[in-house]
Image (tube, rainbow, N blue to C red; front, side, top):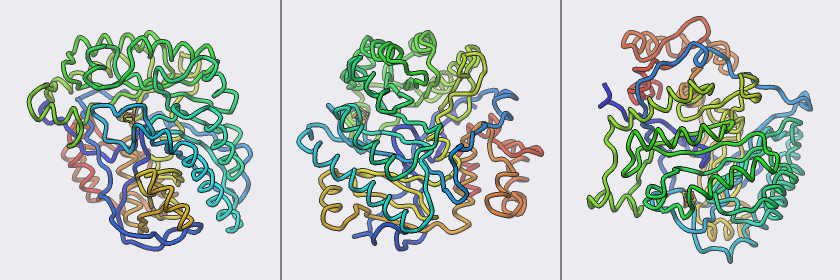
Length: 463
Ligand code: SF4
């Protein structure tokens, strides 16, 4: 069974906001002008390496409670805001994200244009007469912390001027180890950042070198300690597995080291290599060898066992959270990413950022220079938009929802689409249950451990 490991999943990771993108091309949503050109990329897919696992009753059935915003107005729409900072100090050897090194000369103009884009969207929403509140803001990249904190403050200020923040608004910044001192991290807290996501990736210097991360394990420990000293109480640690030279033992030791830090949240991602990356080329040439799928599955299983034993709740395929008090209080789940996994509306700003808004999905031009040029000349940087019809929205909702360990709740499905799950997907449900790929009860449907191994087969049935 372990050989059948790779899943095809539409991944919306903390690293990027990449929605399902499909459907008929249409005019973009209110508040934006028509896209200047087509050229839609196929929707972004990532391959999640997953192993067999036991999903505990708690992890599967416990609903992920979300507080509704206390300041919510009757007609207010709540949304997640994503801000893309596409700049990095250097390009990591495995990276094919929309990020660029050596572009510090663009920082100032990029921030100015980004603020303008946010303000224009805010004004456009105001004209619709419906108030929009920000439930979360996520600064992703790239490396947001290559920008001065004042620049992040300016951008966040624009977000909150244009989209009233909920009292409980979550503001995340991705932090690259080695980029900020204690004073700067403390400033992030002062400007309203509530959550840090630290890109540790590995604690082995050799692995970090192969990945071309440009920071050491010590830098990661220092960054984490500084975040704690600055008073952050919601810190995520990103780790990667399936790395060249990585063994089950070195992965176990990385996990133990991470658990020793007691982060509130852990995101564990398998290494995925795209053509055109330095590491991809080295693997193709046979210079470096990746662990095979069976080893990857074992690493995933090891992570599940260790994290569960340390009190973390597995709430999404690649994500674990623990209670705020470390003993099972309210889980420190990533509210921002929950918006993606629940197919809720979100607005993306910046180069290459994706949005899902009023049943349209659209995205901006990827290169910062192109983004700036388009926004300056056309008043927006949208290069593609698509309207999702009801069938596509249902399908996205189910596929994304199945990433969550609690799966898709029938009550939520009816509330969203006005028809019972069985009416929309009765045949698929029966077939998949018979094959042991999903399980359902009165509450909802979720992947079985076997279904997690054969995710492609499950998701294809809902397309
Ligand atoms: S820091 Fe992140 S976005 Fe930047 S190059 Fe490395 S992996 Fe890519």
